[in-house]
Image (cartoon, rainbow, N blue to C red; front, side, top):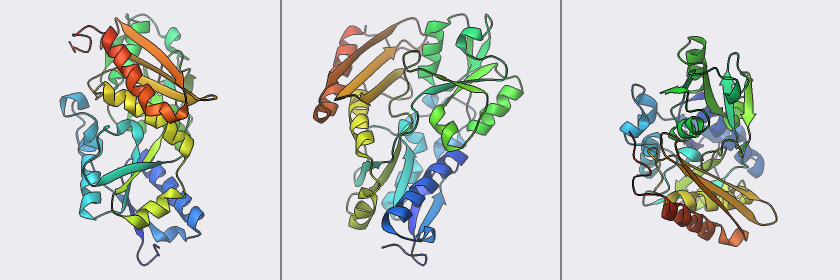
Length: 308
């Protein structure tokens, strides 16, 4: 077992939210195993996604930019486990790594954030909205094609500063991140019926080396099975659509006497949305995700995801 002299090293990005998620993981592990908090060491790692701030991530390589250096450190033995925001995670795992532990999921909803306006409907004609998410951009333009959308990179604090500086009138954040940082920024939560969230939004995943039995035993005690079931459906849906930062995809699974999965794909300019859903047994979560993706893909013309 880890000790203060030989702590378990937890790798994470260095943003305030990522650090909060890593500290939550350490606290849960310490409590579950009756260990001192000092038996766990947080190791911040700067990723390519953190360094690239001058252009959209889709132009630089997509989701893997937030995980590559952390996974390399895990494979090299520099850290023992890695804590990730699941909506940043590619669906394919590097050889030698496993992702099979999830913490209880936070609020999945998007938050509308503005200094004066209370919601999307309140924005004046032609207002500028900032977002780095193709999904949010497409969903917003589908509802309000009159709006102007600009690229909006950076962590939560950086984005709030951009609003104050007038770069945009409004932006979107994840309610989960605001809750985990105990931040109130004048946001209003958007119902999934109005803006279906990103696949795995609000979920924290913990990655380990496949042959590390100690890490496996430690993590098994803090795994949240309901979150795992939901993400099995959502990530199978994403995988079957070949989802990346270049494709506007939304998906959400809920446990309601079984599993209810909703999914949608959008043209990047918001002019068209294709959506459907599945209900079935929790044991069929991955199959439902793949099946729903196949339906949406069959309904979409070949140029559906083209970015102009």
